[in-house]
Length: 304
Image: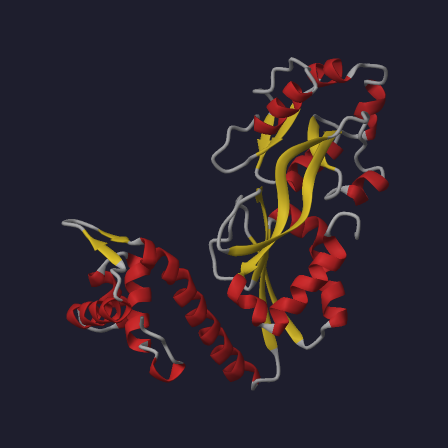
């Protein structure tokens, strides 16, 4: 069995493997690195020989990662990403400031980003935070140091810390609630327009349908309006029209301020939650580690 030492790491071969893995094409990988296709092929073949394992399945018209290649690629990519970021930070800041790349889902960002960023900066002013917010369910699709993701529970290579599971309940404007006073939950849902939040790959009425079945409401849930984010749905509901299923933790301030009201005691865990996600190998990075500890301390349910 080969034992690797950093003095002899095949960096050019790993760079070639990363490029081929990203493109699943030797031709495209060569173009991206500005070298010949034969050079890329030699590097990958040499790395496979060194490991004693194939990294790619070479098919007549396509290329696919093997099990070994699938396991190795995110590690190699993450290592190069961190080296690239560190070099850019040093050049940009003279080594005095460390950048933390952070991604949050839109509604989470809109409701909680300022407390997160302000509180973290007060405790750690020497860390430069590069913050972005993108609107999809599941793992981030851009390179980050840490991300809050909104998804069902998942297993994988990333470290995933549950901040809270979503608990939803019908919510609407105070005026609408007053006009519907005395109605049962089933009648209230049946008589009002339903507001949905889009979930990638799922039908718009998924959460309302699950809520209706859980409480035996018999509601027709395939009606109403669908919004890209919960924050937009909440803004629409606050304007006096429609009922949404509101995450009582995410929108706690809106409920406390009376912007939205929750007329019924029934709450439902819809199977989705907010998770802090980062690569396992990044736990050794003191900046990422301190951000993880700060988030868990401040934003897990029961601590907030």
